[in-house]
Length: 304
Image (cartoon, rainbow, N blue to C red; front, top):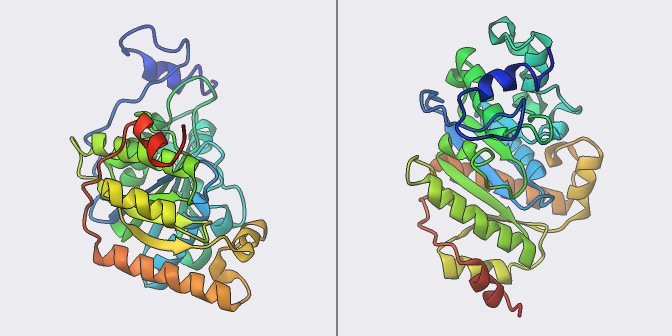
């Protein structure tokens, strides 16, 4: 039985309206899934801004503080945990397909893999292109983790979410998270995406506990535009990572920065990640950020 004509077709039944065709599945929140008492963070940002690198290094930083960490990659590329596990781990969807979508036949080791320094890694995967919504996949992943009691033994959960897509599906990790973190660079495209993400978080906050936790400035020597935008919208920067070649090379070497040969620059980056992890663990105040309209942000950043 194929994925598209199997589980997705069965799940799609009952969806109002014409849908997206045979095999399509739309996102419907699973309000009955409780993720337990772990501190939960969702990491968002423009595609290619370094969310996976940031998420993985932050996961290791939490583990260095003695926390039990679970990182969940929410991207069909399933490369979020690449530097932690040193491979492209099979996805939850891969595992379900192996057992013809009989979830009760899955073992923990079929979809959870241990990475560097004990960080537990899960790649949710995604539906086939054009046949549905990633929110369904995220929901099934959280449900599986709960059924296998994995969230009960976890202190920190980090959702690493696809690009700057803020549809209901890929915004679904926000219904589980306590704080949403936004990775951005000091440029127009990154800040524009950040503004849209703030709007998505604001919408989710009407029905869920998630709030904006703050901004992580990444791949940027300066932060002047980020600072201006933060001041105008009510955001704040939690950490700043400069555009260092050592960080770029760490991913090419399938490594987190904590495994790289020590240099003064990398030691400073490690210290910043550890400081960020500690501040997040201690708790950051929710931000009541107010996003700009699209035309407003164009004018604000100096575009005609």
